[in-house]
Length: 421
Ligand SMILES: Nc1nc2c(c(=O)[nH]1)N[C@H]1C(S)=C(S)[C@@H](COP(=O)(O)OP(=O)(O)OC[C@H]3O[C@@H](n4cnc5c(N)ncnc54)[C@H](O)[C@@H]3O)O[C@H]1N2
Ligand code: MOO
Ligand SMILES: [Mg+2]
Image (tube, rainbow, N blue to C red; front, top):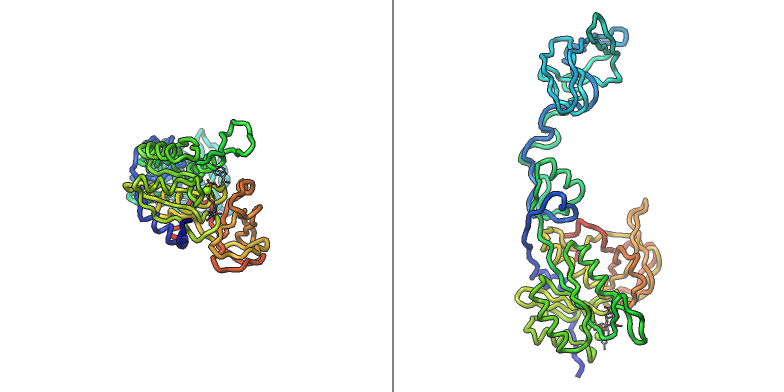
C-alpha cells in the first residue's frame, strides 16, 4: 500500500532541522586568504585610529591663534621652517608665526593645531627664507584628523560570524591581523541518484538526461560558504546506494542527495535512512516545489534528501541546507533574507501549499520588484539561470495580481535573516 505522508509547515521543517545546526570549528588562515570567509573571532581595534593627530590635507601646519587677524586685505605671514611628508615627524619647534609645510597623512607638529590647504596660501622667498601668507583666520582644530577620531582602542569593530568583505579586510590589516580565525568551511557531500542520469561530458541517449542537480547544488554549497564534495551519481539500486551513502558519511559534515525521496518504486532514500538507523525529521513539507524534501539525522549528522526535480531541489537547498551551513559558519542570521517586493505580473495559480515562485528581483525607485520567471513547475530547469529571488505565496491563497506587495527571499544577499518565517 502506498505510504501516506503527513506534510508539516515550512517553518516547522526549518525548526526541526535547525535544532541540529551547531557552530562549526574555527581555523587560522593568512589575511590574503580571508576574503569571502566568515569571521571566527571578533575584530578588535588594538590601537586608536588614527594613531596620532595628522593632517588630512597637503598644506601648512600653524598655530591657529596666529591667524586670527588674517583678512583679504590684511594677510598674515608665516615663516616656513621645514617640510614633512607622511611617515615623517617635524624635527623643529614651531614658534609663533612659523609654519611647517605638511603633507596629507603626516603627524601634526606638537605646537600646531590647524592646517591650511596649499590652495589657500601664497608662497614666496625673502632673504633666502621661505614664507607663506594667508588671508583668512583658522580655529584651533581646523583641518586636523585627531587621534582616535576614526575608532578607539578596544572597540569590537566586526563581530564573529560576519562575512569577510573588502572592508573587513581593510580592518584586519589596520589592526595587524596577519592571520585571522575564520569558521572552518563545512564539507558537504553530494550524491545524485537516478539511473537516468548522465555525466556532463556524456552524449545524450534515449530516456536519459544529464545530471544538472549535482552541479547546481555544488554551486549552491559554495554560495553558502561551504566546501562541496561531489561523490558521484548513483543508479537506483538499494544496495549500491546504501553502500555508497554509508561510506561517504564518514568523510562529510552533511550529506545532500538528490532524487529518490518520493514514493516511487525506485525511490530508495526512505529505506536507506531506515537501514542506516537514521531518524527521519520529516518526509513531507506543505510547500511547492519541494514537498517531498526529506531530512534525516544520524549521530548528529544531517542527511538532506532533496527532490530530484531541479527546481524543487534548488528551493529545498536554500530553505533547509543553507541555514545549517551558515550556522556552522557562525552566522547569527543564517536564513535567506526576507524582504517585500512589488509583483510585476499576475500569478493566477491557487496555492494549496505555500509556494516559492522563482523570480528575478530588481531595484527601482519604488523599492524592490519581483518578476516570476518561466514555467512554475518543479521539474523545470531552464528558468533557474536568472533566479535571484523566491516569491513566497502563502498556502490557502488564490493567486496574486500584478502590483501586489509580496514577501521575497533574496538569494544573493549575504547578510541573511535571523528567522524569516
Ligand atoms: N505518486 C506520487 N508521485 C510523486 C509525488 C507524490 O507525492 N506522489 N511527488 C512528486 C513530486 S512533488 C516530486 S518533486 C517528485 C520527487 O521525486 P524524487 O525526489 O523521488 O526524485 P526522482 O523520482 O528521482 O526524480 C524526479 C525527477 O527529477 C529528475 N532528476 C532526478 N535527478 C536529477 C538530476 N540529478 N539532474 C536533473 N534531473 C534529475 C528525474 O529524472 C525525474 O524526472 O516526485 C513526484 N512524484
Ligand atoms: O516536491 Mo515537488 O517539488 O512539490 O513538485
Ligand atoms: Mg521519485
